[in-house]
Image (cartoon, rainbow, N blue to C red; front, side, top):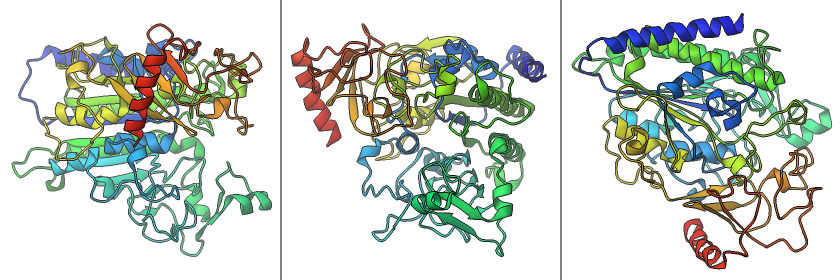
Length: 518
């Protein structure tokens, strides 16, 4: 039933789009922009990138009608710094002060992808997972949940340039396990307040937690965010938002009566842990609950595309689909054949390619050649300036300082690389991409694949991957170099560290790494 519904929806949207394409083009209204971000989705989880297990017809349709980047990279291998860079167009290591205690990371006066759109007449909405913090970076702040969730929330999503927010205030495996709309927790009963129990106390009390603590009390608020239905509810809210801005009430129209364009940031929680698909999708994929969640997300994306089509907005909406970082591997899914990063070395948290390379698809009828691909390096940090350029917006002074405008590349006007380097961070180190080269000024993955303390994670040998610095059992070789150098053109899987063969290139990139880091 699921696949029948999926294909029916796909055919309906595609057929309608073909009918519209056959009609004479009229003067276009201002461009809408829809940015869809999956959570921990690897390139091997998407059909059009070569997934052998999962079916993603709606995402594949975006690629068939747009462009697919084959060398797209996040700037960080985990959620928060990657999303910070997308929103701010700025490397996360430039953020200061970096307390790491859950404060609102993007300063109130810093332009974001959303604030620039809003300043140029757009209605802006953020739906789904946000992981960029709440409140101020106080010196006396004790922990990441050191705010009062029972009253109006402090500085957060709305201050990043969004008119509307509905979603989870952190990852869905981190407390509080609730939905927030604008500045308030949904379903909160004052007589039953929400309480955060920190990690050590939660562990001592035997409360269910994922290493971040627990959220107790607030029974109705917790029930309003069923973990199996998060992405469905978020999708419903996006469709409702599209319906509102597609009309012409005064609140969504310009002074001339024309409907205001929109910018939507849609951030799904799939397939981040915990992978709990809804009953409708449970057991329907070939890769357990992980695959169920991916295919479920694709179905929800199809519903959003239908909503755009219903309101006649498909041909005038720039749609961007990506993931915040590479996929993480799970023991049970590895045993079933999970190949979420298509054999690239490493996984989420690592600066190796498996943690950094992501799917990136852009659809814009009449501007982007259908079914095209781009090979040069693109980073998610570039999305802001690229989307603004597509909308004819000039970036204000100081906005997105590390972003580059990739519009000519994705529209096929140029095949030349616009970005020649990228600073990439893992959870325990960083790397520099320069042309085809990747320089890592330390041993290991800078993430969980070689972090022995990450006992819960699959190590490099358990992933079945090979690297010249490591023995077959995952032990670092005694004579392994202190740093790493790879050429992705000749060795895309980073199987051989060639730093000793290219000392001059290593020295050049080591110096450049220091310059960018500082």
